[in-house]
Length: 141
Image (cartoon, rainbow, N blue to C red; front, side, top):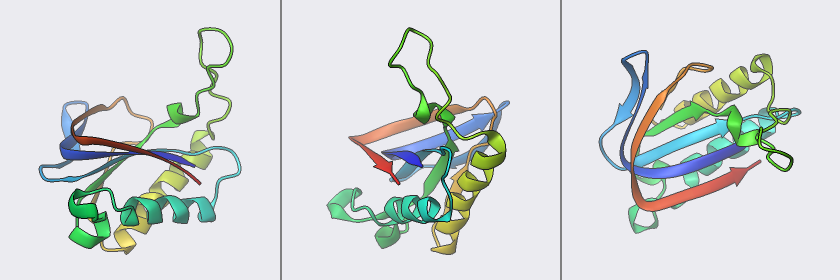
């Protein structure tokens, strides 16, 4: 799994004109993608990193301050652009594998008591955020 974590002062995800998730205080937008062979161990690692990385103000974590998180499925994190001009998506897990894994990341964060919103898997989403810092971290599990 891969996750790009962006610290934001506010963020929202809108699908078909409806806000699916939002926050208006410091939190994390986590773009999460799955690849072939990912499973529970990768889910746990990504969820732990989202919850515990000390990337908020005063070197605190989401868990330390109860910061909100928005998880957005992002198969494009596995784009291969080594050849030509058209990305290859072969590294991304198919929907039937990836969707339950992304859902499991959301569930694992909620099990830690974190307020989590999510986009809609496979939908065209408008993701808006005000980057804070900016702080952007790549997590690979």
